[in-house]
Length: 260
Image (tube, rainbow, N blue to C red; front, side, top):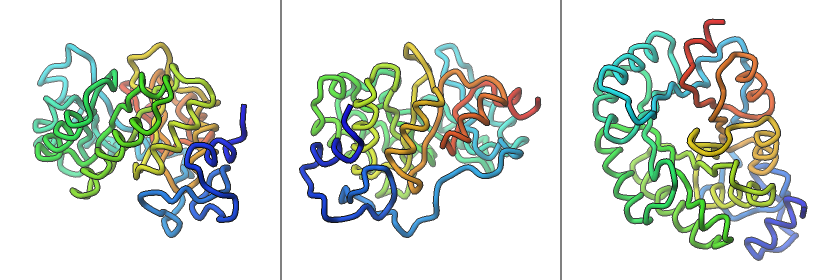
């Protein structure tokens, strides 16, 4: 496998002379949509107060209105980072929440929607009260190395989020990607203007691993967020993900994680 730096140079056809200003082992400037060199590092430091890093999540097909109300109440009680629900429940979640942000998933879980559909879905979710957007990138195009299409897809959603001052996380669905694919996916999301890269939908063939989190953090550097999601069901696993470089956790077992 090529080094992260070599992959970045090949991907964006850039030279060696300009150093990276926002971190990452690529060691060159990607000329990102948003330069984050002056932002604080996005690294977890407090492993005692885990709730601040957890997106309390309910994305199952049979989720009900009562289920959403329940996790919103739990999120307020435990002061989780956000509540993450499907788009149909964003308006309800936003209404139920007072201090905790509402998060919606876009193009979920396959990432195979048309770009204009993702942009419209993002706008509608924001109008319904979403503060954060977790977008699934175009996984099929990523696997087949249609990188410009993947970049433009992410950038269109990122531009919409930025115009409304909302935060974007890009799900790269690590279980379907090679090591090179994971690096390239993270680089594309970073350059396109996302605030986070995220491992998984939880609906794929695998979830977050410590190794993937370490790789993603090495790729994007300290200034971008890294979210570990999929299969995180206990406190030990959550802490291991944070120590590996995650600064956000997606979990449906949030109460158990913070209470044990």
